Length: 230
Image 1 (tube, rainbow, N blue to C red):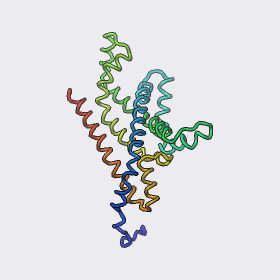
Image 2 (cartoon, helix red, strand yellow):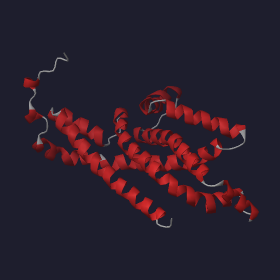
Image 3 (cartoon, rainbow, N blue to C red):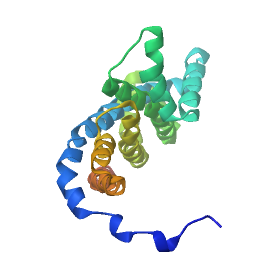
Image 4 (tube, helix red, strand yellow):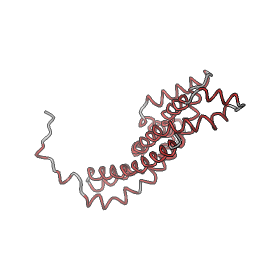
């Protein structure tokens, strides 16, 4: 019904080890840039997401509604479309970014929307009595946030923030669409010159996998570190 001819499938061409091995160093050249985009994008997302969370929960409508609009827009539009706007669209109005910078801005500002919601939920999970106690002790708003609320909220936020980073790390593959020479872009080039796209894309996948495992282990370590005092 689907027109698939099982007898014509050539299993031996699914993955050619010799092609993967010979092109592995070239594809690995994309790892540093992949990590650069992911890490800097996450840092931007954490900083911007923190202030968005505070604005989203503010009593002031001039802070709350712009933050809600920003979060809604970023969560409701595809990241690939946003990358295209930054890299291909903005030059039309005279704003031009290098591909890597456009990717960092795109992933950073997009992830900030998701991080903002995680931060907001984490901050709200801290008992309101903590705020009242800090106020009774004469703490300012920012002193309360920094010394009392954030340490407690961080423990709650680590698991979902770790998931955001893992998703961001894998999503950097979309940067290949705007010519950022990261892992998938290198795999595409290798696929073109070897005419063996299946092997090259599987090789790229096998590179992403251990990268995510390393950061998953780091997430587990941070969770245990923050939970040991409970």
